[in-house]
Image (cartoon, rainbow, N blue to C red):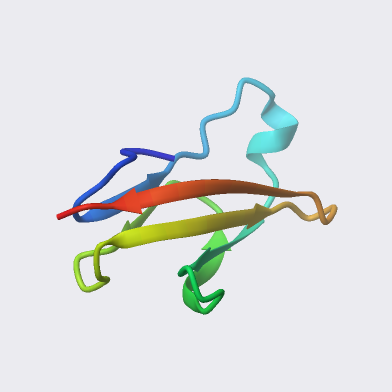
Length: 79
């Protein structure tokens, strides 16, 4: 996930050194500080989330794989 902090787009890269992980489908959700989903989508390839219309704040990206494992990352939006 890059760049962080960001001012316009949040990039999610699907690059993986393990081929079996590259074939998985992931679900992504971006939450604001009030735990409201401001973006969600299926991640099959590299993704660019347009954050230009979101206010400056801290956001939380949750990415869940097809086995239910979730990774979380804090994103700072500062325009």
